[in-house]
Length: 326
Image (cartoon, rainbow, N blue to C red; front, side, top):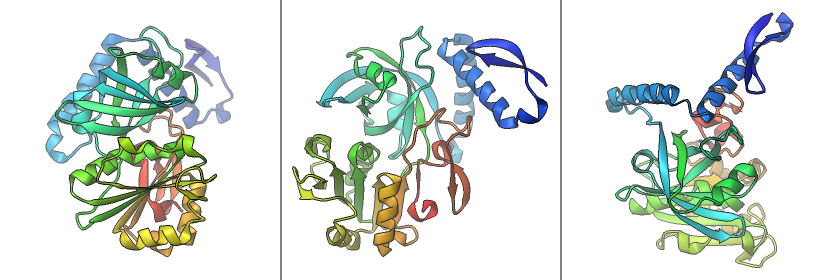
């Protein structure tokens, strides 16, 4: 079988054995070609595609369609809160108005005319000031993309796609909300804490870290929220880990009307096994934390097997009912 595909960013004819060329491979090459076009600033392509999407969203706005926009945002502040951890504040009015807790955005992490890194990087929306049109992103330096991002100064422009995904759901009956975070995963919970406090809910946040360096700064949390810290070395707060603090965590679970977890899969599984309350329907949710390639379901690389069938983390998540993914 001979097909026309992108190889090393160059379109060419390639001959492959017919049985071995699956539909998924074809989709991946189409997806790669799409991102090459996007990364090379094909203005006509970008304008046509996303203006069309915005038009469709405007037509369907009364049907509660998700609003996803490609926008250029301006960095208004870049603050280093730990070594290798920065809080970026951006002026993004459309993103600030549309974003909901637990959603994320995909940021292009290279210069305007560059193509490396090719793929965008996903970041949870850390907090929002809707009236001012401001959003913040918590960035941990993990590679070339994030290293480039934290070097950007005030006034720099960023290419952002979002908001994306399915976020946290807080039922109307909930009055006491428990948030459980681990290391940098707490970034998925901070916007939820802000939103819950604004709705006059009682919020308790429990974070585990290996040591004091990884602890999220309390000054960045709403003053009304209770904040409990657990460190593996005992340098701050209680000593141990989330699964070892069974009695302490159990008392908070008894108090809570709902729990939201942003922890590793291993920790989530241990907590689910140790606490019966987390196994109740509509009580616990969890953010599935894994690398995302496209952020919109095109590449199919983030498929997740759940009790409700196969789901895509970027489109159906990243937030799921805890019992559905255990």
